[in-house]
Image 1 (spheres, rainbow, N blue to C red):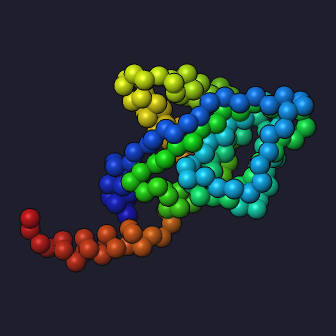
Image 2 (tube, rainbow, N blue to C red; image 1 turned 135 degrees about the vertical axis):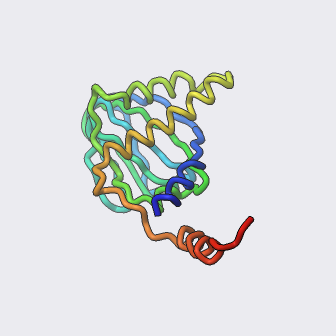
Image 3 (cartoon, rainbow, N blue to C red; image 1 turned 60 degrees about the horizontal axis):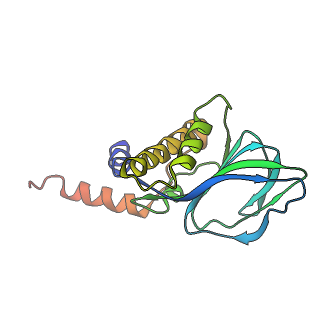
Length: 182
């Protein structure tokens, strides 16, 4: 299976859709009821608290919490009490849009404020309005770095490769045809 994972992740592509920095004041309202997006979402809280519900499980998110909400996942959110701040972004990962249906990852991890996580979000936010090709490539590289950092922060025992008909079919084909020469 490691060989197949290597091939899969060699072809991994990251596509930035939108993102930025969001500040919610004491009297502001930030909330939505259950909905889902076509893209994956990252929410990285830097100050204050809010609530995030993912697949009917409610989290009280606070500074230092970093959430990953996979594409097409039901979720809602609301500010709690007081102000909060967060970085956010929507992105796609290919070759399989539902990469995270194959990886059983936790919906949130804690990040160390001295880590490179905030630097990556800041840089993506700064470059997101640029039309320069070099900046678009840099954003793509930073998205992959964010994904790698998220996986690293999730305890290795929390992440597993789900059984997949897709992978099983590929392995079956390889095993049946391994003796054939090209």
